[in-house]
Length: 83
Image (cartoon, rainbow, N blue to C red):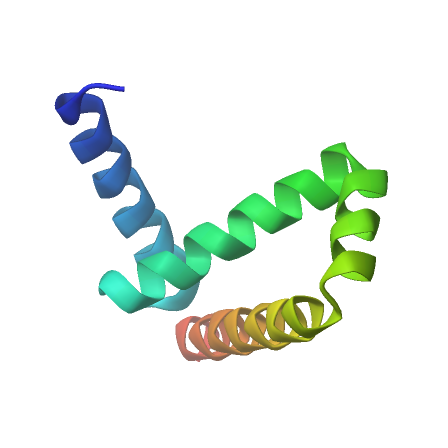
C-alpha cells in the first residue's frame, strides 16, 4: 500500500471517528479502527471471531469494554445533537 493511500485512509478514519464519537485524536482513531475491524470480522466470519474470543478470553473482555466505550461516546454525541 502506498503512502498516499495510507494518508487518505487515515483521513477517512479520522473523519469517521469524529462523526461517530464527536472527536478524533490518535488514541481514539486506534480504538475505532480496532472496533471497526473486529465488528467487520464478527459479522463476515463469525466462526473466526468466536475462535479468537475462545483463544484470547482476556482480549475478548478488552474488546467488549472498548465496544461499550465507543457505544457510550456515540450515544452521548447523539443526545447532544438531539437537544
